[in-house]
Length: 430
Ligand code: AMP
Ligand code: GLY
Image: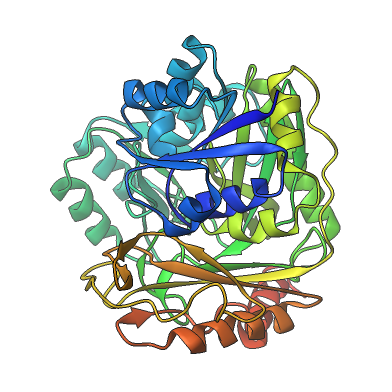
């Protein structure tokens, strides 16, 4: 029987998943809170529903006779959508609520690493008493990262010595109404992401990606969900050695071994420090934007991964094209603090030239596609080098214009990549 794959979520990441399945021997059905025109074009049917409501998702899955589900974002994982799908007899490629705590509960995640002796764990303490947390900041010898334990869309972390002073950090703790926080050693280095495809106690990793969380060029401004990202034609990034990549993979391996029957994507966010890779966080899903770097170069049929996972087999060996990728998001002007919605999107798949176009939070009207208050669309260039891939992405952004949009032109440019290399060399004392 032809597989019926249900895709849950409506962002750029899910558009990339939809495209990875577009040529597979499967019918794709999709549901999300927003109507994503890119996904809707590929899917046999698209339903708008609340994806954190497991009953609504299961009802739609049963209506379309889904044989496999893929869960894109973290919020349905936290809401137990994978558990409810399984209870209804539908395999979900995405962890159950308890396993998703590796992302949704940062205190759990750190304790899990400590209890299982997983390498790469920074020094940390967890607090539910905010006074005690402030005392700890006063007494701690060194800078700390302040992390709310729950989900904050990547925007809740404050790093002392980087974004805030110790005094501002304490004020932040006292003024926010978080009930649990983690205080951990500030890691200094360069960040990179490795996404692992996990099922049946086996896993396969994909090339490293570097995301850019800060809103403005030169890594200035507030944190965002991610403004853009790049990967190289090799598994590692220009500032890493093969050994750094392998060390990060061994951390992922120890984590997969310690988790029982985890399935889905395990996203490791690492800091390459002077002592090697350390874990900044784990996510229980593909990254957004990182999925748009990884899935376009995945040459193995993603459907094969999904069916192997469901059927109890090992994750098939993954083949990736040896191409560099650069992804850049266009966001509404003023994002993320004061976003102005309603700009018309002036680029489409045909006018994007050699770049791939992925829609995220947009509003499709009779006369065109408009921005909302979140990341709007992304363009991705693929080429032999990061520099060439960057130029392809920039050509597509030029078609889009800048009217009502912000974007980071610096992502993937030779200058910025060189700064990363210099930074790591400096940390290593080279
Ligand atoms: P997270 O939500 O855990 O991904 O954190 C958001 C961002 O905060 C990360 O991408 C890092 O840039 C930064 N961050 C988190 N933890 C640390 C840490 N221990 N040291 C330095 N920076 C951190
Ligand atoms: N790009 C960061 C994330 O998906 O969490």
